[in-house]
Length: 103
Image 1 (cartoon, rainbow, N blue to C red):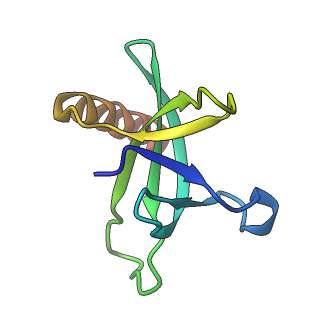
Image 2 (cartoon, helix red, strand yellow):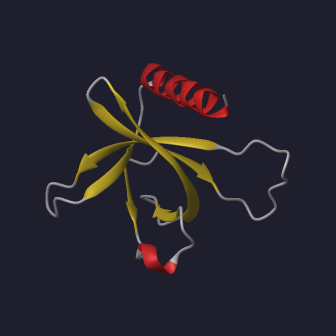
């Protein structure tokens, strides 16, 4: 699992709400920004993988990353969440938020 994931394309070059991330292996993927959530004083970003052959009725893959500061640049970086309990808790908060918005 990737430790640090950094954005690598200026936001103005991508469609609104889409960010491009490169993992530690140099693999670049595009994600749709869904929301940012606070969980126990830490901030997490919820993203959905943008797939070329995605069908309208299929659920996409959701990625939850912790937002931290890069010590060298003081910029935000996204870090993998290795604690399954934390990932699940943030995902449940995300689902509750989505349910509230549907009402």
